[in-house]
Image 1 (tube, each protein chain N blue to C red):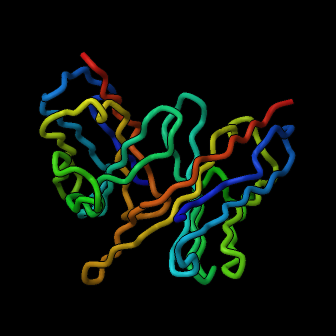
Image 2 (cartoon, rainbow over the protein chains, first blue to last red):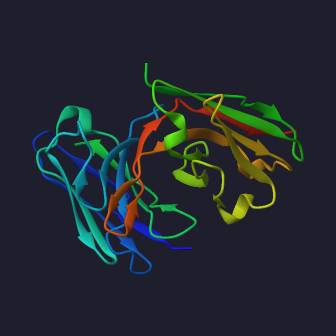
Image 3 (cartoon, rainbow over the protein chains, first blue to last red):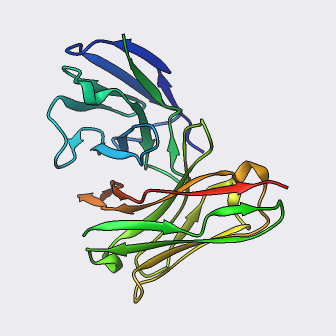
Length: 107
Length: 125
């Protein structure tokens, strides 16, 4: 199975900060990667698919980049509602695999 | 209203069985791949299985192969997960999700754009 490694596992940031989360795949997955946001007790929410395509309705403060094995989710200006856990998910091969998650906490 | 609603979770003994259901409404269920994802308490997300629109393709994570069966009934707008020989490590919230697959050339991209609220499965004696 393709292993997905996210970093950092957690980070502390303030409203207005630029936040970057990285995800590394154990093999080339081209651009077959999505990003999801999850808040406590809630279902995940799709942010990005195909590595850089913004899901409809998601604020443009979110962006994704990367291809091959290295990917990045960037929040250009952190908002209060963005404090959550973020997961990458590869859809290049089966089984699909998630990264272990990155918790974004308030500083 | 466009939504997915899971049901069927509960407490079951190790070795037991459970069938989860996911009722879809507000969209044309038969047009979409569907997926099950689970989350153990305090842990991350784990993809479990998916199924093609016509049930011709099903995929599973290795840890559930031979024990879990994904199925669907397009006439009833419902997705199912039959779980047999349950283990303590299957304890999790189980989510169903719609895959709004995006195509670009010959590449298809998963996009789990709609999720249910989740149903809790606890495997314990």
